Length: 252
Image (cartoon, rainbow, N blue to C red; front, top):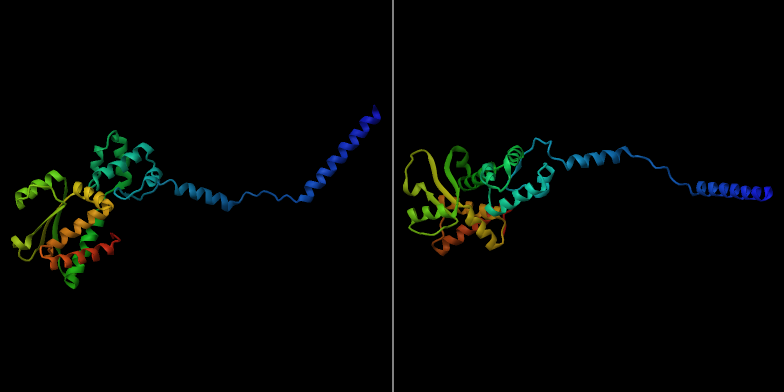
């Protein structure tokens, strides 16, 4: 019995040495924890968390994934996107109170991280004026009003001032045709139905944003004297619209 146990012990010892030599011969590389990999992981984590940023995002263009990174719950992020799709363009953050079950907490979060990019509209309008007036643009100040409204209200305006009892996308009132403000460059008023914009974007296969800036451009050109009653004038106006929209990558 002793001999048998000794033989087994020797065999096990031999196998152990063999396994040790085999493993060593395989030269298994050491596993190192890379500081660079850890840094990249931490950086990625920070990039996926925008809640600590001071930056605000345009409510009309912020994406669903960005809303999640800002800390919005999935349900609230979905509601924001659905509401935006429904109304077309959000012209004031206060409109988000109309989002069902959005709550005070949702509004507080929206006011903290989201805003309406009015500057974008101003830049668009300024570009049209500068492109039209050239060197005269920097020498003068220009004034106009923009009302973003509903189908019902624009129909009322259309009925009262144009004797057309139907909603439309945009109405322009050029002051140079009816008013005299002397040295002040009062261009006029533009009224846009955001509901009609959304209907047309769906009909033509455009984004709501592209359609909004198209009707704004159309209204601006009317203030500047363009028209489309005659076919020749229509060709000129359409060409100008496409030139302007292409500058902002709003193409068909």
